Image (cartoon, rainbow, N blue to C red):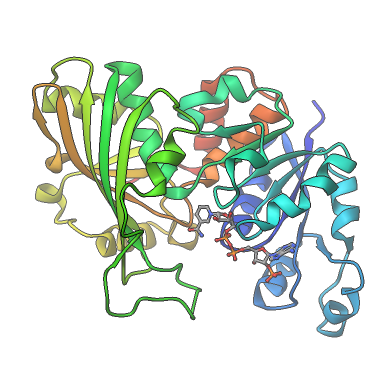
Length: 342
Ligand SMILES: NC(=O)c1ccc[n+]([C@@H]2O[C@H](COP(=O)([O-])OP(=O)(O)OC[C@H]3O[C@@H](n4cnc5c(N)ncnc54)[C@H](OP(=O)(O)O)[C@@H]3O)[C@@H](O)[C@H]2O)c1
């Protein structure tokens, strides 16, 4: 079977991880990645043997630093069947006319407005609806974390409503100029936050409201979630459902001593996971409290990597490489080594 040719436009936090994940898929071929600046990330991409494409007229800046350029970003797009746009929020919309001009399908990221794509996407929620679409938007890291939990509970029991409070990391580790260093910021001060609104781009029927604060850490986000289900349940049933679910790992703080994002990050590094990534949603099993039909729990989201499996599935859905969501999900998860923890 011929592989689908995929370009990655924007080789930053998300783009570099998506590019690596594409190279692990036997139904995809990485055409190349784009950079606008000849910095350490460009050197790293070239060092991995990835073909580098740059804006027209900028080739010499790269060549002067000894970084081989394979062509312009437009040339990269013209050689591809599908592009994963991982440029900064709002930049993807500016590239959209170029993708349309070359008849190339596009997978955008959560920093874009929902209107950039035909559908917002999460593998566990709406893979079937995304099949064959010309453009998809993989929702943000926090939205992806919320949707994984909600769609798993909805499939098994049914979800009526969700309320969640999000403690957001202030910056990614490489973002040297961002803060706060010593404050907790209401994000935004007026409620609700945009995260619940973003969940509704995938699940328009859901009664959901969220609040968020920004905290001085780079490691992960932590959510406090309260979900009202369609019937009464119990802690052991919820644990059983989450244990069986793809892309969710249960951690017991009593057994493991893990009660922070720092310890989760340390486990990922101890395990030798690439870049210390945790693409799974982490749920603290011993945080789960059930009162009738109401479930309350803590979960953690590794912002840099949680959307990577969803990007791979979005490529497969848009390119119609697999019509069955579970075929794509299990292929993605086995190639990325997901849910192998202890
Ligand atoms: N980081 C997260 O936690 C996270 C999580 C989920 C979703 N997202 C979303 O993913 C998207 C990308 O975010 P990110 O965190 O990966 O950003 P990032 O680390 O800043 O990476 C974006 C990359 O795009 C490149 N770029 C900038 N302008 C460009 C242009 N005009 N053409 C081509 N490339 C350009 C930059 O590379 P140069 O150095 O070459 O300019 C930069 O490395 C955003 O929509 C964001 O909201 C981010």
